[in-house]
Length: 230
Image 1 (cartoon, rainbow, N blue to C red):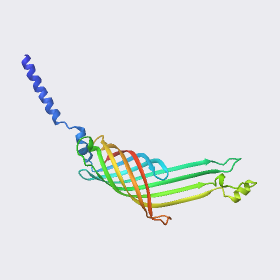
Image 2: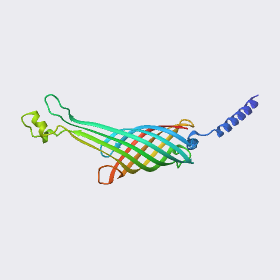
Image 3: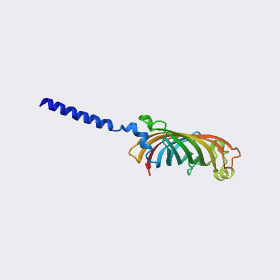
Image 4: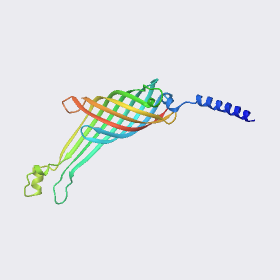
């Protein structure tokens, strides 16, 4: 009886081990799962930092198509807006001394993404590069600082001598390039989430009033994204 029970246990253990050997490790199949769906739509939210005027929220929409094993083409649209107010607003007893600044960046990227690792933890990484077109819009309203005013006897004289506000506005289309690093985690065959870091270098003004066409500016951002397969 004991011998029969022991043999039965060995047979059951052998069957379990055989089934376990046939199961797929999820980490080993991350790369394969990402390439089963050829088309994906995604959205992302993150933070963008600009070299010229600080950081702001970043919203993105993406379309991705797998063309080869480990190779994807992506078209993305990104938008970031910033507004700031400095100084003190006018009151009944004082002149205005403040400035308001805003900017909008609307960016279109065309990217080639590569997934060089096919198994394990590293299969979640993707590396990309491509071309960037960015429409940049900026504007400001400001008053003459108190330190630069000559203070006459009356408010009317001040307003005649120094208009209370000055205005500035500019826009233009610029061209450049970008680099992206993603880490993708598949939740199912059609849904995945991930983290993206990217950097843009803007080099050439295509439109705008500025006669200087060589343009040097850059942005960097980090985003959390969700993609759904079609």
